[in-house]
Image 1 (tube, rainbow, N blue to C red):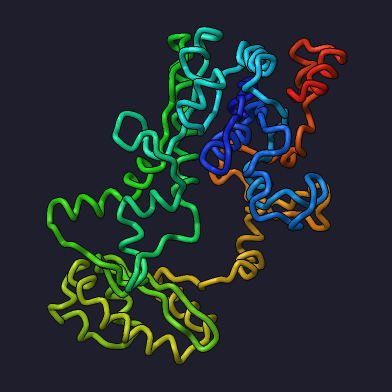
Image 2 (tube, helix red, strand yellow; image 1 turned 45 degrees about the horizontal axis):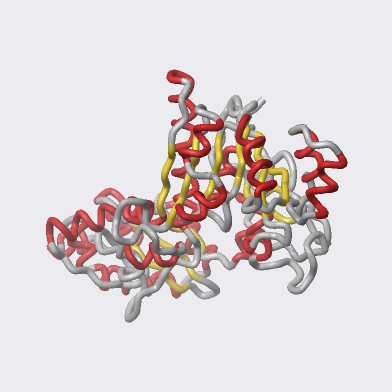
Length: 398
């Protein structure tokens, strides 16, 4: 039995922040219903397995498969009168509504908190927006990369021009924080019997993850610029080329710096005032990177990593995606679960719940749903007869 067994979640989310929030709740045992456009929502087709293929024949995207496991799918037009009635019935017995949609869209769909709480005072509404509500940018739209740019992260990434991360860390961070907030709201509801609004925002997440850099700027006015893979706060920290690949090395703190100097066989680094502490080593990191680069280029990646590990210096190989899939530790840990999906010839390696509980762990119970796969089943459970469902289909409501 999962931690959230018995909790019902209605997922109106799209792309990453909303859907992955609901996914994390589903991993922990919640019953999650994804409500989707009749023709399929945009996020269903991002990075498709088979470009141009139809849903159920390989047209679904890799992002959808990860972010919608442990869900059932109901297709619905919630903007119609009949569609809003379906939503009302679902909300009556739901615990959580997840919707990363603009306020005006929430109002039009009847998913604003005032409407939801009038139907079910115990409901928790989890919303995600780009900029949060209450400021001058509240009605703007935005994605992960916009938040990376506006928090200062893109400015300090790369060298000569701003560079965002390939990984959408703002989206996944917002989803995780929103799931945390949702579980906190459910916990509080046990005491009061009342629901509330949980509000996540991409910009808030980005500012949170980047906050200590902003604190430094406010207090020291350092006006830092991008220095590639080096760290401005310690050294040597960088990515180095070996005979046959690349390795990441991170020395933070004097104990690790002493180990690095010993590995280099050169004690003079320890008495040079340019490297007296982490901040000084960050300020003069180019010299430390040059020395480490010389050391790495005479070794293969495997040789370098073995010596670095023996010296207890944090390091790792720079993998291609295929090398990450093939890594023996990743395989041994069972992080990536093989999951079959209709229309796909091979199992997809879907990442498990990224936090493990010893007694009540999250789990992937079933694959992401096909478009509208559970529409009849869900509506039937909420009192709709076969004739009712047929009529809704004829009206293009479901």
